Image (cartoon, rainbow, N blue to C red; front, side):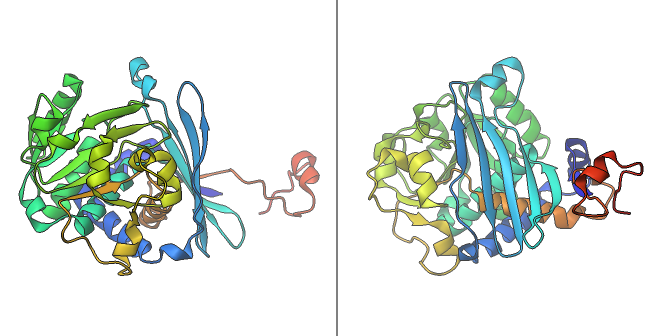
Length: 345
């Protein structure tokens, strides 16, 4: 049997905990795991592209557990009432190869993305950035989680948001105002970022777009750029990327999918784990720091293990009969066709 967390069970669990506290815990778990980054197998995600979108597998493992996530990216889905991104994930025991936990990961991806962005803000921003509002460019499925994570870790309560869809802005204002957060809808990205210290971009269009121009930024800022997650999809003006101090998760993957796909292949970037582990110092003099985040399998590994440890032996998981386990491992035929099924007792 394999422990399974369904969408409904996860929804019920999250309604029993403080989301801000959970995101703080998840960010801490990510931080500790980034310190042992070199213990993991580092594999760029396996992507299958079509005219409709992309379907990807994101695997990694350390010496004890293996994890993978199945995830898609189909921006057109929202036009027919479906999510742009859906996902599920699995943890397996490395010694036996047996899966031990399976979960929905549409919601978990939003949690780990918010916790990872907040972790980058912790290590790459300056104190004065955190005294100003946070700008959200894109008010889609990620936006609330981003706001709550930054409120929980840094006490930010004032958010400036721009989205081309006014209904998405209204949705964000409705959801966050209920939590006591102030959300101002602005007519342009330039207006949204003007007074901001931290900026998060997270839009869904699968194309090279410019939602933030170089001349929009006239002060010091930290940017979490989250929307560039496949070849040919970017959000930032190349000139802005070029003048930023750029940090990434796994360079080999980000060169293909992130904002830096716009730059020469020898442009200077730093993997975030190097700063967190102490191998490199946090930035000090840069006017613009940029976390060019495309999502990486180690983050999914962390959130799956984080949730498994909290949900195991609770009513929020159930056992699913996923693995054939004949009493005699060599007699799979007898297991299928024998009178008793030959199942292990």
